[in-house]
Image 1 (cartoon, rainbow, N blue to C red):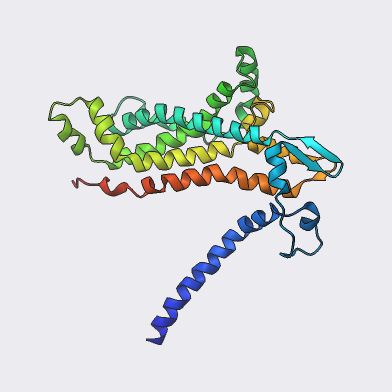
Image 2: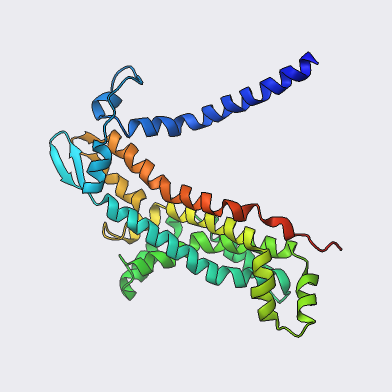
Length: 284
């Protein structure tokens, strides 16, 4: 009886300790966002400091606070660029990838697996491999330093991910459900929109969320193929490294702000991620 009680008490304690261990970097960055550079650069780190909102205020006002004065900052524009580029890239990939995933899952055609693997191989190749030809082509056709050009390039990140994750969900859905729906006289297109997509919604939500995170975190494509007017926060963060020093407090504040969109989308999509009750509804 004592050992059972000990295990019951030890489990939440261990889970709490592990959670605190992994959350400590996030909590420390959160605390740094309310510190000045002087507090952060103390020889002995301490939790005894006077909180300040100067870092957040400087970001929102577009002013980078340095030791030699104020410099202009485009962080909020970079944040908007990240939202636009990541959101538009994922929406385009969903429009293209979900029907393609359904086709690969339901139909067998010549070179189908080869085409699917070729699309997946785009994720294997390092971005630096395609950057030079892409930059030359974009300059020729007028897509360099444009939102449309970056959204197009981001398909190398988002489309293969959505295609392969959603394909797996479609393969887990028994085709008997769709066949029974079509026996009532409905076309396969109606079956796709009214049966397949609702049943695969958890997979589509998970794939869209992961694709958004990967697109949000991209650095190399935006650095090479765009200027500051279209660059996201991952590239815009370089502005915090100035000749007068590194503004750690404002970097921490920028990190906390940049986490909010992905965290909000994850919380919103959470209810869809656990909605796989209908998968496997028909057993063979």
